[in-house]
Image (tube, rainbow, N blue to C red; front, side):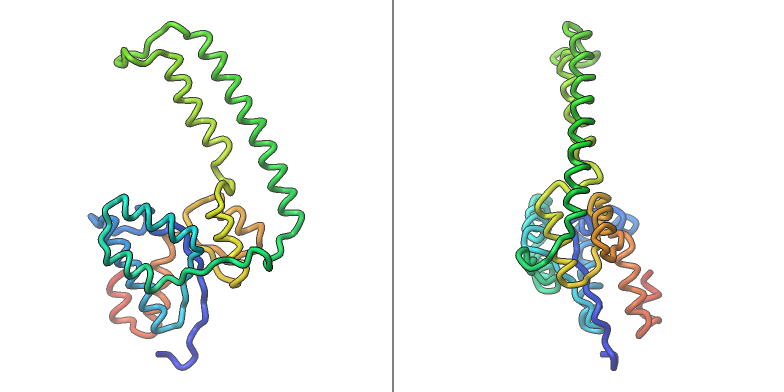
Length: 224
């Protein structure tokens, strides 16, 4: 243990664990999660760097890992080394300007979504009876509807807060004065508006290794 341990805090998003960007060559999801959690545990023991998740993110991540048949070892290490803490919803203050900005952005996105829908309706009307090549069971209208769903989802959701989990992450980071670790551009955009430190998930393992290498360069820099 160093004489003057750091007191860095980070709030972790689901995307950190699932992104292929943290995986080494030929490394699968489970191995990457184990490596990441080993780094988190070492950073906690050596430098007192603490990692947190709100319960909503923890539940979301656990479900996604279980759906991918990840072993209990990963889940046990996650529960051990990543602290689950509820954000203080009634204590953390949010500037009114941010709320107005969110309302304006969502209003604009709804308008853009309507334009996407109008374009799809016109396209469907033009191709009502045609079938899609190589898909006899799918008409052109079916394809238009499928494309509409994808484009509408991207138009309304990409780059914006779209879930309670995202909001919990930001509120907890603000409460703890912690850095946000995520691959989600919407969360990054709002972390900037909240005045929070943030780090892309792909850069988090190298950051922890650098901290650890300060005390044991032979071990940790050899692993990079």
